[in-house]
Length: 183
Image 1 (cartoon, rainbow, N blue to C red):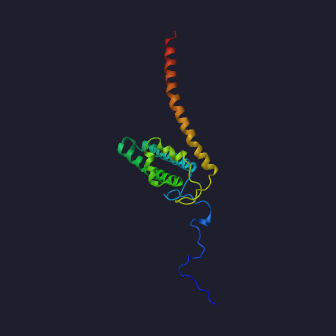
Image 2 (cartoon, one colour):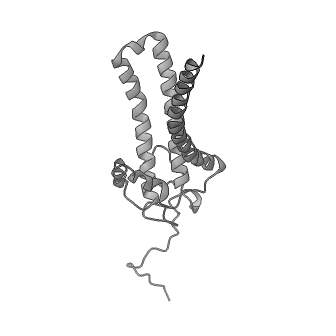
Image 3 (cartoon, one colour):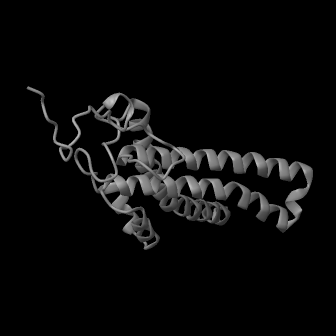
């Protein structure tokens, strides 16, 4: 007896997973708007990209100062623009991936323009398991965790410096005035 196949039945072929090796995590893509990254990786990438931007701006500022280009406001604006565009593009791409981790559209990143609303990208956890944007991001390594902890530490140091430096300046002025009064 010959076996008849149903032409309307679903295919029975094995289909490979979209990601490499069918792993439970998707690879991290730095310069892409596709995929997901978690909170710690987002903070680490943000602080690292800021350090790269700061170092590049310092080096180009030093070169502009040595060559005499620093006297021209147009040259300073051009150098700033050349450095700021890749930095902002990288921040937007990582912000979109972070939005995807929370199962939000990348367009939700416009909410980060509202003061203090951007903290949602830091404090809200991502969705567990797969979501409509793919598999979860890979676990964080030691470098990512160190980079993520640098962001609040540097923020706290900045606040401390903003409070302590003016107080110290007032203290030195008062101390000099007190020394001038003594005979």
